[in-house]
Image 1 (cartoon, rainbow, N blue to C red):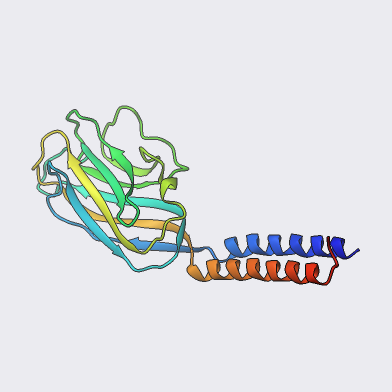
Image 2 (cartoon, rainbow, N blue to C red; image 1 turned 90 degrees about the vertical axis):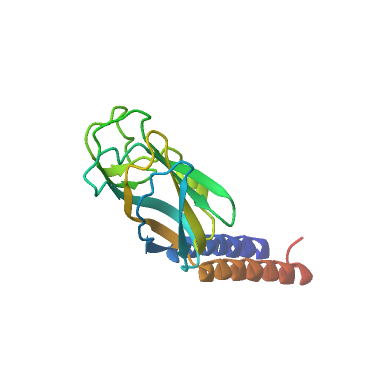
Length: 201
């Protein structure tokens, strides 16, 4: 009888822990600003210092590039996101190494989106699948320094500007992690007490 009660308690605790892990998830929308003349070789590094604390549960990247000088070829770049504290990186976009009449990229990259067409015609506007999965960053701390590495692999120095970039998604605040730990310790304490009282063997 006591063993059945303990099993029920552990089941409720497990469900509560799972619920807390999801209930405390919160959205974030971080604007990282822009920078002029980013089409360079070697790559230009644009840093974003994030103050929001928590562990990443979902991540999307927003990129807006234009050639404000009137030229084209704003989409022949290779763009990589780097999480400095862990060294984790993912290629977000790798443009064609051929010239194409593209002057604007204003796009979001999401693991659940459709892939970019194999032949790019015109500006890149919309929501697309990144080259490498953004789930590589799941579970990482959101706060800290993130780098956007921008490499022009064709003709660097054409005057392409990063108008703006940012990160959106969901994160689990550290408060949620503390609660999970608390529930786990509480469950272990109850289990220890039951054993001491000889209610379970």
